Amino acid sequence: MQLQLSPGSFVDAAYVAAPRRIASIDALRGFNIIWILGGDGAMWALADMTAGKGRVIGGIGKFLGDQLHHVAWEGFTFYDFIFPLFIFITGVVAVFSLTRLVEREGRASAHARVLRRALLLYGLGLIYYGGISQHWADIRYLGVLQRIGICYLFASLLFLNVNLRGMIAALVALLGGYWALMTFVPVPGIGAGSFAPDANLANWIDAHYLPGRLWDVTRDPEGLLSTLPAIGTCLLGVFAGLLLKSERPTPQQKSLWLAGAGIVLVLAGHLWGLQFPIIKAIWTSSFVLVAGGYGLILLGVWHQVIDVWGIRGWTTIFMWTGANAITLYFLNTIIGFEPFALRFVGGDLSALIDHFTTPATGRFLAHLLGISFAVLLAGFFYRRKIFLRV
Image 1 (cartoon, helix red, strand yellow):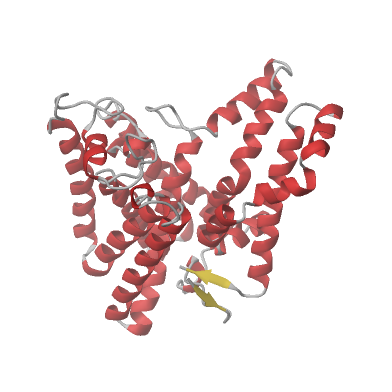
Image 2 (cartoon, helix red, strand yellow):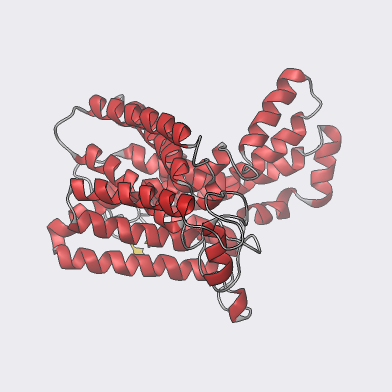
């Protein structure tokens, strides 16, 4: 991790690299990380607060709460979208940061930076899940940060060394190849074409060949084989970055292209999902298309509102959190913003708030306060031009 104090040099955010600052990229990443820093817990508490408060209010609360839970296996909720959105944005940012780096320092330096950043992300991932604080068998060798590092590594290497057609071919090979492996390669004792938990090829490979601790005991959602289509998610972000960096379409046309392409991918993903189900836990190819499609739609809408129409006042906190997203994510595990907030609104005070309002209100306020602490810290870093880049 490297401390950058000079203004105007933010490798962890898109504005460093782009000749024209594209604020929607940074704001979208900040929006994304907010949910990880406590937005999910706030929605869970809100669902409990509104339970039994009538059909409309209770229904809205339940819907929001359900959207902030992963599906049991097959399907798609907003919570399933958070992680792939971050990988997607990583690909978008890579286009700007690496283009500027090649122009300034050369291709060899860009390759070295990519390798160094990927290794750092992987190392932080090991620490994030406990490092070597326990036995070797308890280390989680693949996890969220490790997957981000691996996806960034391969998508960036493709961007630096292959033209657009080559990257499209790589995407088709990754998604099509993964589909073929999962569909036609038989799982010992089960057969081919199964996508059920613990009965598919990806889970079988993790159970037999992935060392260390598996997140779901018998399988891992960030496993070995499922990392291949996850690289495709990052490549979709690279394609979006190339469109935003290009000079030909007008800014408004770029927004329309992003949103239009996203709609096509969402529809294609659901169509493919009829045979290859949409499953985040094994990152199916249909899941890549659906999540990537929603990422394109969201980026297109935010680009239109923020960069084309110039409506930016509401994005301040997202700009702050987006500038140090990985740092905040890491700190949330080390210190925990919500546990820290409970020191101020927990215990008997939380119970008293629940007594005079409605159950779960104290927990809701604790999550909001935790998010506020994270935002204030991010704002402190942002105003003083302190960016911890990884």
